[in-house]
Image 1 (tube, each protein chain N blue to C red):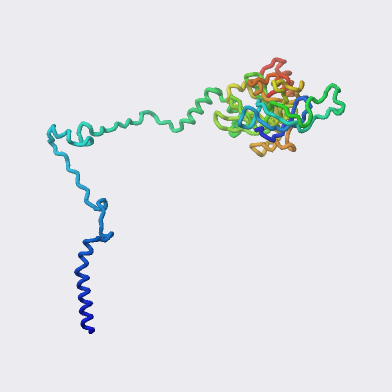
Image 2 (cartoon, each protein chain N blue to C red; image 1 turned 30 degrees about the horizontal axis):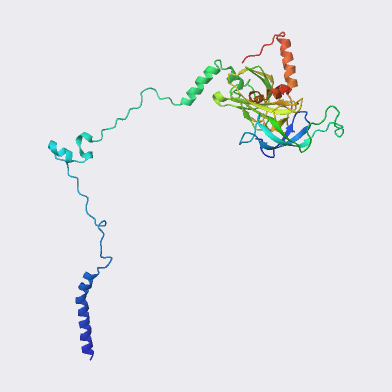
Length: 131
Length: 228
């Protein structure tokens, strides 16, 4: 149930920590796992010397940036075809560019397997764990 | 004088009496008029058809009265014979259970009201699926709903709480193992309070890996799941 104003955790190393949903794409309903959304970066990750920037792990996004993202975890329970239900304790997303490739190179945190069927296999392979 | 006036009055009265029928005839009062529709007449009694009506008069009868066009008697099918099933849904559930769980092992494992050695809320269990990836967690609740019986598991993976409700009789569920039983019987059937941060057990992965190592040592390194 990710909609306008929902705050999500960003679980990649693009530099964003908390983002806010401003639009759900290709859908008239709230977004769930595997849906593409537009977000505004609200809080960025601080990597020690963040002012110098070019120290290997530079933030690729800054506070106030508008980016696309894919929802990878949702608090709202998600029913699988076999009847089992999966739900997470938080809402989380991964930033992507317009072409659909992830901006970050690493991910930390579990993601839902539903990403596989929806062209997000790359994100699924980057994730350390999936349920 | 008085006499003459009274006579005149009488005369006047008389005149009016005489003249009234005339005025009535000229302008009849509205109340006195009657519409045709309000005229009541008794319903004419239906005249029965004569028994032997000659053939040539049949064409003059209205359609509904013609003997060959009279509405036919409708046939109402009788209910099919056979033993009536008192509880068809229950029957289907029983049939499904027999098919999905022929030896009643799953039922024994999850029907906590009837079996003392079953899984109980607060236990840690590990469920292995057909596609290979297992899921382990604390049992928050067991919903006993016949063939739709499900168990709600909670765990923390990469420090994110994950809950999974598994249909116990699903053919996708390959095996269910009890990793650890609760030390003390929980006083609640639904342990939803474990979602609160102050009650959260956290990750059960350590307990599960320890259990798996023990099991491997006991079974001599052969990886085999206790099938239930």
